[in-house]
Length: 303
Ligand code: NAD
Image 1 (cartoon, rainbow, N blue to C red):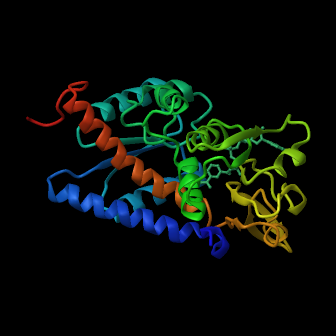
Image 2: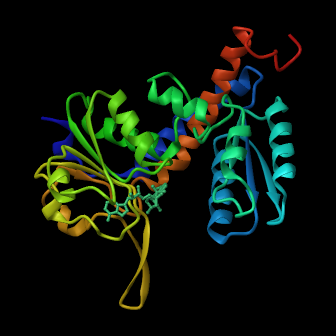
């Protein structure tokens, strides 16, 4: 019997708890050996949602034993000031991961800021060196949300080889890296987007459907192949009978009888993103230690 038959609703909370437990164990071993991984989180301005995300990331880091460094800067922080902070964090031996919370205020050049982060500390996987490395199938830091989706897929159906995966959405943060990771896992990948013709027909061919659009319940049962595995990345706030609620890009209730397995919203992909950020912080430390061994960067401590 395949793993899928017994799963149906993919529990992202349970999987993220497992990932965090793995990270906690690795951090413990590192600390016993005298190294504490560190994660710097930079927030510019006072966007309410960003403040919540940053608080959760810092809390989660502390829970797993990763040292966190929080930098909250005013909304009128200049590009140069932000770049100076990033240069300091790049050089800081106690900082293994650097995350700049997006979006940045309009006067800041987001691309330039992300490019300023050392690729070895780029725990969001947004630096061109890591984007290019992912496209080439090299071992690099990869974006947290698609990485979390891959873990859910592997845990649900094991080997993905030869499956037809359709990714709905082509953003740099989710859709494109998702497609690259699926390709790396030997899937046949189709990326569809707002200009795609015959969107429903293509979605209905998917053994694995990843929805990363940001449109509440865009995808209903008619779009899904019977027995498909559906990963719903979308997070959309809607009003139902005067009450606010979160829904995905897939009509969950309509899809459920049709699919082999599906992630709920909330409680699916969401919790995986932070868990993968913690995992990436350890991977970043590992990549930095490797670079020191190979003498590509100077030794971070007297050695
Ligand atoms: P985005 O707006 O950058 O990209 C949306 C993509 O959807 C675009 O590529 C666009 O071409 C495509 N699209 C738009 N309308 C479409 C349509 N009618 N049919 C087909 N494709 C269409 O968004 P994003 O940053 O990729 O995020 C997508 C969703 O995922 C949002 O709801 C966001 O909140 C959510 N998200 C969740 C997490 C998480 O941790 N769970 C992380 C990132 C994003």
